[in-house]
Image 1 (cartoon, one colour):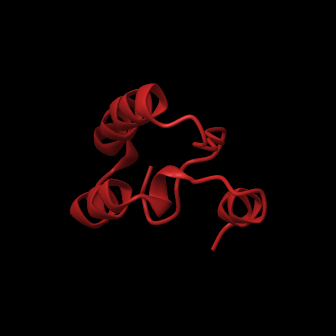
Image 2 (cartoon, helix red, strand yellow):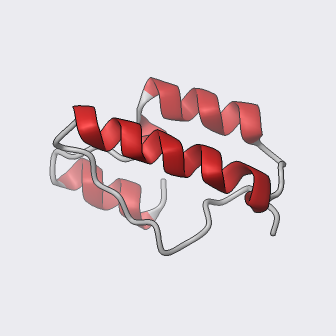
Length: 68
């Protein structure tokens, strides 16, 4: 678990990667370049923010496992 996930868990929050949809998106896009994956995660973030108030987001870093 990364620092953002640890923080979210400790504070009763959820990261995108903790959701079932986030886990699926991560599996589907693993190894793809961030230029291609980034817009998918950004759209997913906007959709989740509308429906889930306890979503913790930290988007200054590129997710692990994605190539530049």
